[in-house]
Image 1: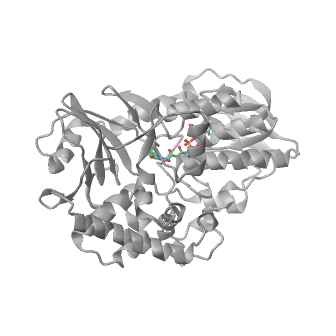
Image 2 (image 1 turned 90 degrees about the vertical axis):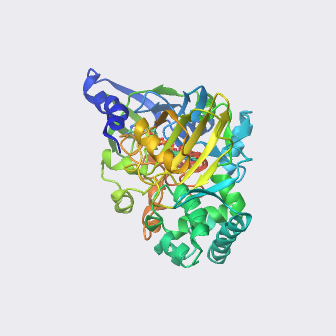
Length: 452
Ligand SMILES: Cc1cc2nc3c(=O)[nH]c(=O)nc-3n(C[C@H](O)[C@H](O)[C@H](O)COP(=O)(O)OP(=O)(O)OC[C@H]3O[C@@H](n4cnc5c(N)ncnc54)[C@H](O)[C@@H]3O)c2cc1C
């Protein structure tokens, strides 16, 4: 991805460790939570509920982690995680708990079009029916191997070792239908289907009650009107936690009595226990003493494969409601309208490969747009380079064939006075906000048990 964006996104954070004066302070805390994403804020709140006093150490200058609510072109946008749905029990319960309004997005009235060799073609009802039928076939395959959603790790599933590309190939779909299926799945797994275990799709199909319609709606159906930051903030406020920003934890030592955490600026916090919520792809950057278990080292050896791009494009004029799907070779595999009107339109887009589109390069984005929306003028565009962001190093957790058993449940296993939580290691909606919240609950319970 684009060097300019890398500089913009990563330089201030990379500079932080050297630019800050050495604090070399040492303080004591009850229980530390490393990271203030959804796993971290939930863990902090649950720790408080269980009678502990949480201290949150966050490397960035904001909460939310891989969710990032911003204003752009006069609209609230989400550079990271956005959509939630009633199929996701943890996050759905949280929005009700804090009385947050939700709204459908993108435009529910948008007719789907697919990108063919000669530009956009409206998807016919027959093609849409065939796409849903293809996903229904995969759902029935799923039901046979994962009969109960949250028990997917208890079953011996041969699809964990097969790629999603292989399984979709076996459906032998006509090209037009395959484009619609690929557009959905390549977007859902943020990269080529060859890099995705077929069981990744099966897990979410099972969580959606084996319904392709619910699957599509769960991936992108409803958002929090006030933004993800409103929910993360509400949870954190309930935690009544001390929060230290610009606190990049680089070393964690533990013994029988507690933990010692050392920040990039040399300051130290000692605590009775800690919960680490750093994303899977960044765990290698923390030095653990003693070393993490062999199982966990195996789990973090290779990065997860969620490494695509998400961007917002502000264009002149009213595009009308859009939902465009394209095959895996296109720079954008799904694009839809968040807003459209005479004042302009705001498009949201996903692609599998950041090398094919640079959200901060208006000329590049215009060229990509010309292929599907000729005549539409780009005014500005934006995205966040999660792949080069040192505190994320990827987007959402997508596991390739053969890795599921290595990564889970080892990643979530507590070790001595250390517990672990992350949307990347959740049991159910792993790779989603819901999974991050689920993992925060579990890790707080782990701490309660270890300190009992
Ligand atoms: C582009 C994009 C689109 C997405 N779309 C959706 C969606 O529509 N719906 C959905 O449900 N999910 C979506 N997701 C996934 C979802 O955002 C994540 O699964 C979830 O937010 C992860 O939460 P977390 O708390 O586990 O991790 P994070 O949010 O990554 O939080 C971890 C925190 O730890 C901090 N940290 C890291 N290392 C250290 C360290 N060493 N010391 C101190 N702090 C540290 C980080 O700065 C961060 O704040 C998307 C993600 C991306 C990137």
